[in-house]
Image (cartoon, rainbow, N blue to C red):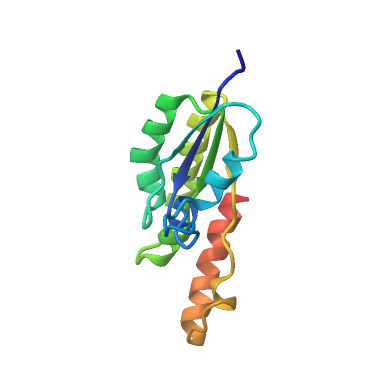
Length: 144
């Protein structure tokens, strides 16, 4: 019997599939489509939620993922942390680090993505754009 691969996705709207709907309007997301290329049987669980921040990933999504003992886990978070008042890159770093360490402890292979530069997509007032880009760069530095 073939080994079953478990794949969990944690994070925010970028992880959950917002903006990536199928012909029926269902947001399946990139991870779902990735699972379609696996040759092994796979158990897939997308635990992400639009609006989630790194604290939610650590405290709520991660425990559910750990129950699965994932072989692969995508962690895509940080955009909502950066958008909120009181953004603290060190808190984001601590949350992400704790999340990744616990996933490594169960032997999961981890996928991370950095955030894109939103100022190239949406025209923002100069000061707001500079502030947002500085925060996105801080998230990406932590992720890297």
